[in-house]
Length: 117
Length: 113
Image 1 (cartoon, chains in turn green, red):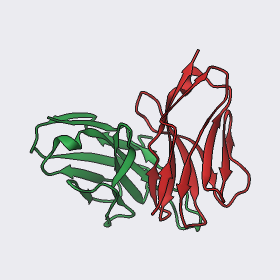
Image 2 (image 1 turned 90 degrees about the vertical axis):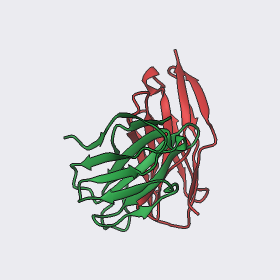
Image 3 (image 1 turned 120 degrees about the vertical axis):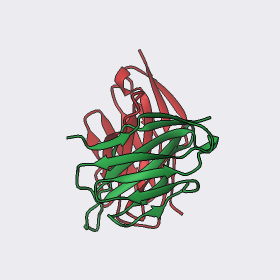
């Protein structure tokens, strides 16, 4: 099984350029997430999608947009890249279910190292 | 607000020794899971262990165990018989609003021979 697949793995952008990070999961999960990882900051949630057709802001949404294209795919777009968006980006998915005690174990892609110069 | 705090940015341990990584969290919820993830230099995020908050018994996975103290909102990870392959970043994670997983800032663990 592929699990969670992110593309690309590496990217260099110039300030002001735009790009879309793609993410797809084949585990039939309802929830999908985009995180960014910076030294000393841990993983910070950018956006998440609890189900197909819904998206919500996380801790650091400014400068990003997302699209939950279908149940499998969740993309992250940088409209006008800035050096502050240099980071490692992770896509993840989970299926908490409908039980009271929701198991939100997340499965991660391999990450995208993005550099904005 | 929901927060997850890891107060040890870096830890080191000798091979075969035991090390404990700390994590505290803040929540008003009563039913949830807690997680420890490992991130080796490969950058892959790997689930190490999970704890169900409604269970009194601490979770154990081989050399990894947790000390879960619900009243104190503390969730520490103990690694016994440390191995060189345990060298990695370790993140504590907690599901905010039961469906958004938020992470601590991480602890970098170095295992020395």
